[in-house]
Every structure is written in structure tokens, then in C-alpha cells.
Amino acid sequence: MEAKDIMHPEDAKAIQMIRNIKGFDFAVKQMMKYGYEQKIRGSLLANSLRAEPRNHPALCCALKKVVKKIGIAQPELFIINSPDVNAATFGFTNPFIIITSSLLNTFTIDEVVFVLAHECGHLLCRHSFYNMLLNCVLDLRESLGFISEAILSPLYMACMYWRRRREFSADRCAACVAGERMSQQALLKLASGIPNANVNPYQLVEQAREYHRFKKDSWWNRIQQNCSIIYDTHPLMCERAWEIDRWKNSWQYRSLRESI
Image 1 (cartoon, rainbow, N blue to C red):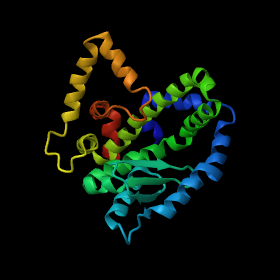
Image 2: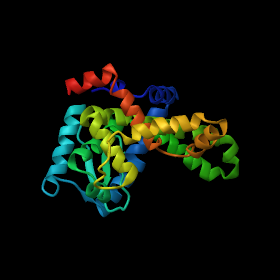
Image 3: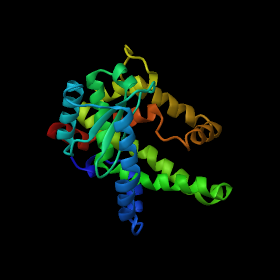
């Protein structure tokens, strides 16, 4: 699998713009190697559990199968103690995935495969690498104070827009590995937090249709809804379900499902 096979068009467009910034690649590689990446990995080694075959064989086996299907090197996997049902990926020279204890307690192993494939999708697309631009903008906003609002807010909101769009690329990767139905089921648990949600797995897709009608009802609804997500790091859950439902009908999805 290659990044271009699963990358959302708006994600790809934003990354190409970042690549055009002269010297950006070299600067970020150095910051990742000697700064953020090492700092976070050190904290994880000190305060979390690294998943290994001897302590979490099923989880490690699942990750091994996921990376083999995607075609990337296997990252380290850390489990942190958290009430949030969540996961994240970080790093470039030595990437790693972080998964919370609550997610493991809520998801079945098949649903965990979706999460792992989603995070590996970020690694395939090098999202952690390009996310450094957003971190730089955040640091500048804090250091410049009120001046930054006028200068950097448009760039910051553009970066946040890309951050939401990159999740669609990762979801596409996860759907190819875990299957679109299992992906919908996992998104339902992420949205509700209910361990045994005995509902239609396409419930969020149905809600997406209703949500789209709701937004189109009036200009005020559109303004309110658009303003409510401009600082969000992830897309709306129903939009993620909607995008996967659209993706399953593409020849790219069918081709990748057959080949992996």
C-alpha cells in the first residue's frame, strides 16, 4: 500500500503545499530526531507500558498483521492509563503508537485492528512529520501573545482544517485493513463510549444524512456548525462514517481490499 492510494484529496493538496516550503523537511527531521520525538518517547518509557508479545500477545499479533498488510515497519506500541477512549501516533525516525487502557477495555480485538490501522495510516502518510508545522504555529502564537491572533490565526485555522482532513486518509487506510463494516462499528464505539452497543453499525451514516439536511435548512445552521469545529482536531464522527461509506464504493477501496 502507498500513501497516494488512500490519501484524501484535500490532505494530499495541503501536504504538497508544505513540501514546497524550502528547507522545511530538513528542519523538521532535526526537530523530530533531537527534540519532540525523543522527549515523548522517554516519557512513555518512564510512565506507560510498552506492549510486547510476552505481556500482550494478541495486541502485538494484531499490530504485526496490520503493518504487514500496509507495508510499513512495525512501530513501538505503548499503553497509557487514561479514562479517554483514544489512540495517537508520533515520531518519524522511530515512530510509535499510543493507545489508552480505556480503549482496550471497550473495544474487541477486531475493533482494535481498525484503530491500529488508522494510526498506521498516519505513519504511511507521514502525518506526524508534517504535523510539526502546526506545532510550530502553536508555539509562535503563545510567544507572540495578542499580536499572533492577527498574524497567525488564519494560518492556524488552515492547519487545523488540514488536521481534520488527514483523519479521513487514516480512516481510509483502516477501512481497507479492517473492512468498512468493522470500521463503522468501531466509530460507533468511539462516538458513544458504550462497550456493547447493540445498534445498526451504519447508524452514524444515517445520522450524517440527517445532519447534512439540518445544515442545509438555513444559513444560520451552516454558520453555527462551521464555527463550532474550526478549532477541532478531528472531523465530526458522522462525517468520518459518511466518508468511509463513500470510500467503500470506490475502485481504490475494492482493489486494496482484494490485494491485501
